Amino acid sequence: MNAFYLALAYLRFHWLRSVILVLVAALILAVPLISQTLLDGARSTLTDRAEATPLVLGNRGSELDLVMNTLYFSDDSGEAITMAATEEIWDAALGIPIPINTAFETNDARIVGTSLDYFDFRDLEIAEGRNLAILGEALIGSEVSQRLGIGPGDTIVSAPQNLFDLDGVYPLELNIVGVFAPTGTADDEAVFVDIATTWVIAGIGHGHDGVFATDADTEEIVASAAIVEFNRITEENIDSFHFHGDPDTYPVTGLIIVPDDDRAGTILRGRYLDAANPLQIDVPSDVVGRLVERIFRIKSLLDAVTVIVGLAAAAAIGLAIFLSYRLRAREMQTAFKIGARRSMVLRLLLSETAILLVFAGLISTAIVIAVQSQGATIIAWLLAA
Amino acid sequence: MIEIRDLSFAYPSGEFRLSIPKLDLTKGERVAVVGPSGTGKTTLLNLIAGITVPQAGSITVADTAVTTLGDAARRVFRAREIGFVFQDFALLDYLTARENILYPFRIAAGAPLDANGRGQAERLAASCGLEGKLHRRPGNLSQGEQQRVALCRALVRQPKLILADEATGNLDPENKTAILDLMFSRTEEAGATLLAVTHDHDLLPRFDRVIDFAAFREGVAP
Image (cartoon, rainbow over all chains, first blue to last red; front, side, top):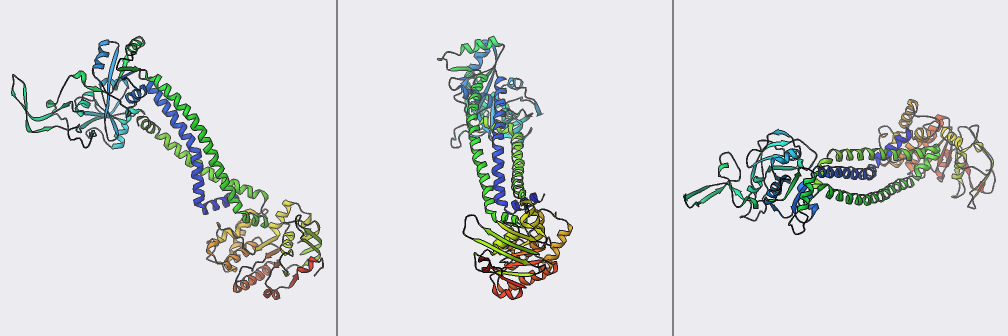
């Protein structure tokens, strides 16, 4: 008890040195645990979602970019394909295509344009509000709702694509009608809209006033100089919204395909094997499996680096404690002359080390718990980045 | 109180050799040890305290044959019977004055810290003029105050023998006198014997006896 008391008094007096030692020791303890926690979480998140997604279709190119974009809404969307690809899948009658358009974002959240099939496919439950009904409505993920403090009744504005392009895509104010229950996946970080709403954001569809037909026979349209495009879709102006061009040419960044059965999936894959076909179909579980394998190969290297850094830091801490005892040689000599027991010096050393390690352990535990509690968010963010 | 007979000590690596055929100190006696540097004055204190062990001869302190004790027993003996006062005070910078005075209870064998120990520390501190300063750390005390704290630490376990090694060496004349007054009065009050190494010849008349250490180099009893 006396050794503990003296050790505590010493550490408290030299508080800066003690704090540095505690923090270094805490990090040595926490870093491997955090990396293990995040990697395990990332692996299961990647694997679970990939295994739940039978096939994805997109432009020929990086299979990883396609999977990461279609499943985790990452930035790497690549070149868009068209709705004609969706029609091809429908025509083949071998499965259900679910279009995904991740071309836009808002408040650091991806706007995901899709069909209602997506919500059934992912088993997404609406915790608050209702499902999408009309153009311009949005259902938001739980993390987006929490982070931005918004919910049904609020609005959210899509980010402009280019601030300096006055002729470009204008932001659209989306009406939030519901919030999904948390899933611990990338869906929590997304803002879901109908696929057609993303086309409005893209400028393919729009609504405006000040336009009237002058000749019903020729369908000539005349717009007044005061034409105003609507940047929010409401019950009052929804009828003025219309789309231009061939619907088959409207863009999507990828498709999720839910084949009717294994045989249908194999047939579909076979149809897109030809390298001359500008489209490709990938099996997410295979792509993610290879990615995970690579990550864990890197992780073993990271583990080795962590061990080496940990040993070096532990040696530095040991050296700091040893040097501190060398500096306290006079104190030890005084203690010896006064009649200190031989074990007292050892107990002082052990008490100081134990106190430092206990505090380091508490801090590292707190760090690990904090990371674990936010693990799903961190992993979703890491995967979406 | 102290009986030294045919004492012979030499450091293994050096040419230094200390021989004391006979030296006696009576209980309550206040004895000064003087002599040139390197003549073994501090070594004598260490031998009496059982910190170092002589090659030959015997040392008896308060009826305890120190030279026959093992290492652990010598530590217990030292903690119980001897109080040390050092030239550089040897206070711990991370403890308050009060905690420094109580330090022997915390690290030494034989007497755990209790209410009596705390009471003794408070009384000693008050008698040494340290009231109101016991919460301060050594860095916030004057040198004279630091040596008073060191003196209280030496006396707190009520030892029978006080060994002072140049205890006034770092002090100004005013504090020298004050500390010596305190050392004398407190040791007398405790009925303890005082053996003080000093270079300060002005203080020698105040001691009961002065041992000139140069004589021991030739193995002659003073």
